[in-house]
Length: 196
Image (cartoon, rainbow, N blue to C red; front, side):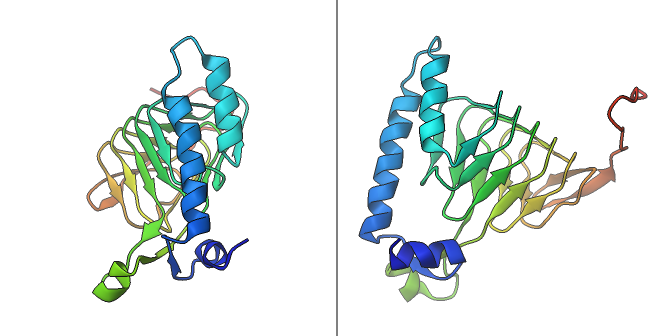
């Protein structure tokens, strides 16, 4: 493993134009080009490509094309989860998505951070990255953006178009820009009948 990759995965400053990282991103893009060009009937081909691309993909989980990511290997998705059209997952740091997660179209999970005050460092392609974790049974509406370092707790719903800049606890509905908690959600144990 090269020095810049080690720095990236530790959350330290690293240069994203490192030859090893560029080569990995190009390899990822080649798999994505194939995935995004599949025909509607080619479910088995899509699954095989995702299995090659991602760190892990649970049973009955699915991603709709068009899908984009940086490396793929740092993305882990649990069972029975779904990412709708045009998802962008910038996996410069690990992205973990739990079981039974539904993510709406054009969602963005962005782990990369660029220097804000140091414009020279930006010109020299220095950046950092922070992991994103999405808990089990989360529903994120269309167009949600999740920023670096954010964790979203189990059974939480994020409203469409939200920009999630801070952690969101379990069992809440949160929305807005910046995303904030709107209300708690009732916890219904498995096997119980929900009150509508």
